[in-house]
Picture (cartoon, rainbow, N blue to C red):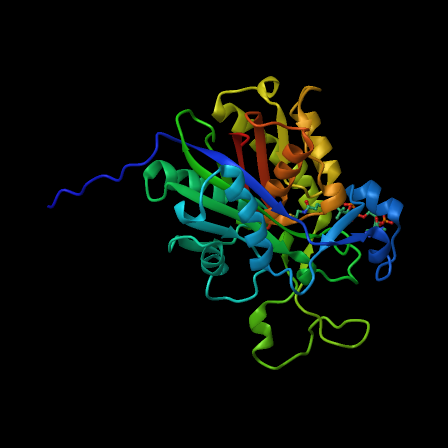
Length: 343
Ligand SMILES: CC(C)(COP(=O)(O)OP(=O)(O)OC[C@H]1O[C@@H](n2cnc3c(N)ncnc32)[C@H](O)[C@@H]1OP(=O)(O)O)[C@@H](O)C(=O)NCCC(=O)NCCS
C-alpha cells in the first residue's frame, strides 16, 4: 500500500472578518397589514419585529452575497485570491444546479476557489462555520468564506397571517482562517427529522411538473401561489425554547466556559420571545450583550447570525476579541451551536 502524505493545516481556526448586506427597502409592519388581518402591536409583541428588509429584483442572492463578502474579506485584511473555499448556505436560490457559490466565488475574484452550497435552514451559518473550521485545520483551504444569504420574501405567502410578518432578506459573510489559539469551539449540532414537517415548503417544486394544478394554493386574485415557507408556529416555538437552551448550554460546556465568561450571545433571530427565554434559561449575566437584530431585520434564516454579529460590532455593542455564543436552529429541524471569538 502506498504511503499517503497527511494534509497539513493550521493548528486552530478563527473568524477573521465579518460583513453584511441589508436590502435598501425597509418594510414596516404597516405594509404586512395590507394583506393580513393583524396589528402592528400584535406583531411587535408576539415576535419583536418592527421592520424588515425586502430585496429588489437587482438584489439577487448572488449580488447580496458579493456585497457582504467584499466587506468580510476587507475586514479580514486578505485578498479574494487567497480564499480557498466558498460555502454558501441558502434555501432561497431557485436554480437546482449549478450551486450559486461558484458564481459568487468568480465574481469576488477568487483563484478558482472550491465552491458549494449547503441547505441547513436557519442553522446554515453554524453548519458552514463548522465545515470552514475543519477545512482550515485540515489544510484543504487557508481561508474559507462562509456566506448565509436569503431572499425569504420570495418564499413568503403574504396572505398567511402565521408567517407573513416573520421573514426578511439579506446576506451575512465571514472569513475563517488560521489561528494560533482556539477561537472556534466544538460545535454541538444535530437534526430531528421526526419533526421535519413542522417547517416546510407549502408545495414541492415537482408538483408543478405534472401540469395538474388541482389542490394547489390559490391567491386572492385567483392565481396559483408560488411555494412558500409554512410552519407550525407554536410547536417550533416550544421546541426552540425548551431544546435549544439545552444545546446552547452544551456548547458552553464543550468550550469549557460558563455563562459568566461570555461577552456576547448571538442566537438565531426567529422571535424575540425565544431569545428572551433562552437568556433566562441560560442565566446569562447582565454584562452579556444579547443580539436582538430581529427587531429591524426579521428572520433571515442562514443570514441572521452573521448579520447580527456584523451589526453588534459596527455599533460598538460588541468588540473584537469578545467571546460569543452563537446558536442557529430551524427547518429540518436542525441546529448548531458553538462559542467563537469575535473578529
Ligand atoms: C409565529 C409566532 C410568532 C406566532 O406566535 P404565537 O404566540 O405562537 O401565536 P399562535 O399561533 O399561538 O396564535 C395566538 C393567537 O393569535 C392569533 N394570530 C395568529 N397570527 C396572528 C397575526 N398575524 N395577527 C394577529 N393574530 C394572530 C391566533 O389566531 C391565535 O388566536 P386565538 O388565541 O384566538 O386562537 C410564534 O409561534 C413563533 O415565533 N414561532 C416560532 C418561529 C420560529 O422559531 N421559526 C423558526 C423558523 S427558522
